[in-house]
Image (cartoon, rainbow, N blue to C red; front, side):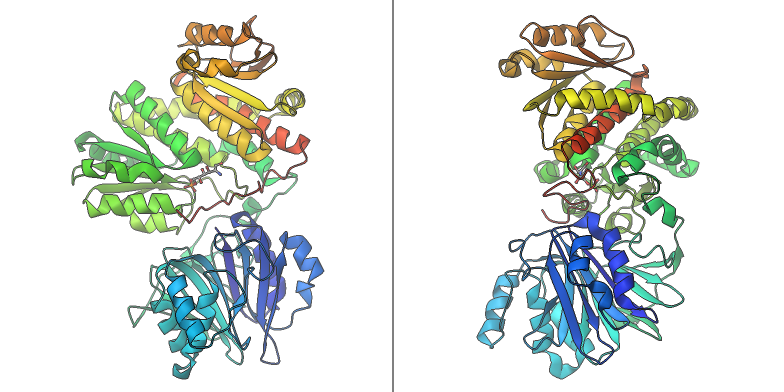
Length: 587
Ligand code: AGP
C-alpha cells in the first residue's frame, strides 16, 4: 500500500528519489518523505503530509545533498495521516533511517520491549520499531544489526535502511515487493520497476527473505544466511508507457490504450495455453479467485466458461476464499487473478491452495510480482504499466484472457482469437472524441445525483458490477448494480422520480432486461441504455456494438469513460481516488 525506493550511485540521490516517488505515488499518497546520507556523513530526513509534488516544493527536496538515499510514499495503515507517521523513521539518535512497506504484526510487543530498554518513539506506526531494533543491535555492526532486526519481524516487509557514515543501503523483503534495478551510474531498490525505468531496464526480482547490501561497488544478496546469485532480467516496458504523454490523466491514457492491450493479452505461448486447457479439463473443481475488478473479471469468466466451454468454474472473492478451503484437493485448479500480483488477499488464497496441494495458475500484469513467483504456472496480461489506481486496461485484458481460455477449452481457440482480434477498431472507437463528448453530456446529467443504479443479466450483470465499482471509486457517487431479475425482490423500492438506471442490453437478453428497465421507468426512473439498438424506453442512449460473448469488453469501456468524466466534472483527481491504493497489500 506504500511505495519505497532507494538509490546509491554517482548521481544526486534526491533528484532521482523525487522522480521515483512521483512514479510510485499511485501506491499510496497521503504523505511522503526522503532521507539521504549527507555528503558530510549524517542522515537528513524531510517528510510531511500531502501530495508529493507539493511536499517536495515545501520541504525543498531538491536541495538535499548526498548520493545515497531512501524515500517513501505512504498509504496509512497504522497511525493517522500526520507528519510524524510519515516515513522515513529514525532511531533515537537520528543516525539510522528506514522506509518500510508492509505490516509488522508483532510491532506492539517489539515496541514495548524497546520502550522498556529506553527507546523513545515519535510515531504511532508499526514501522518505527525497525529503526529502533537496528539501533538496539548496533554493537554487531550495521549489516548484522539489520539482519537481526529483520529476523525479529513478523508480518510482511520490504524495508530499506541507511546509517550515517555507512556508504550503503541495506534492504530485505518478505511478502512485500522489492526489485533491484542496475544502472550504469548506480543501483536502485524499489517497490516496482516503473519507479526507476527512466534510468534502467535491467532488473533483479528478489525472492522472499532476500537480504540485500547495495554498495557503490556492487550488490550482494543473501538468503538464509548464505550469499546467493540472482539473475538479471531485461524488462520490455518502456518509459513512455509509464508516462502520461499528451493525456491529462493516466486513467484516460490507459483507457485509450485498450485496442492495443487487448491484442497484447492474446499474445500467449500456444503450448502454455494447451497445457492449461488440459489442466482445466482434468481438474476436479476449478476456481477463479480475485478482488475488486479482478473478481469481476473472474465472475465474467465463470459465465463465459458456462456459455462457451460448458465447464463449471467457481468465481470466488479472494477475501472469502478460506470458506472454500475444505473443497480443495490435489486435483483442484485455482486461477489467482491479480493485476498487481501483490494483493494480500490473493496471496493468502494462493498459499491456502498450495497447502492443500492444489495447482495454482497466476494471471497477472506485473513482472516480478509475488504472484509470478508463488504460482505453479503463469499467464501474463502484457498490458504495460497501469499507473491510475483504477483498473481499466487491465480489466479488459483479464476478460480477454478468460474469453480466450473459454474458447480454447471449447476446442475453438483460433475462432476465439479471430473474434477478439476483430474487435480492434470497435474498441478504438469507444474512446473516440465523439464517444467522449456524448459521455460528458451524460456525466453532466448524472454528476449531482445521489444514487446511480445499474442492471444487467448474465454477462451484462458482471459488467454492471464493474461499471458501478468504476463510478463509485473515482467519482464518489453511490452506484449499485443488480441482476435485472432481482429488482422486483427489493431494489425497486429505491426508485424515485428521476433516479438514473443504466441498463446493459445484449441481443440474447434484450426483451427480459428491457422489461426490467420498464419496471424502473414506470416508477419515474431515468433510463440510460447501453446497447447496439435504440429503444423508446431510453432517456439516454450509449451506442455500442453487439459483440455477444465479447459484450463485457465493449460495454465496460464507455462506463470507464463515464466514470472518468464524472470525476473530472466533480473536480476530483481520477488517478488517485481518496482512501484507495493500487496495490492492496493488507488484509
Ligand atoms: C479497481 O479499479 C480497483 N482499484 C481494485 O478493485 C482492484 O481491482 C483490486 O484491489 C484488486 O487488485 P489486483 O488486481 O491488483 O489484485
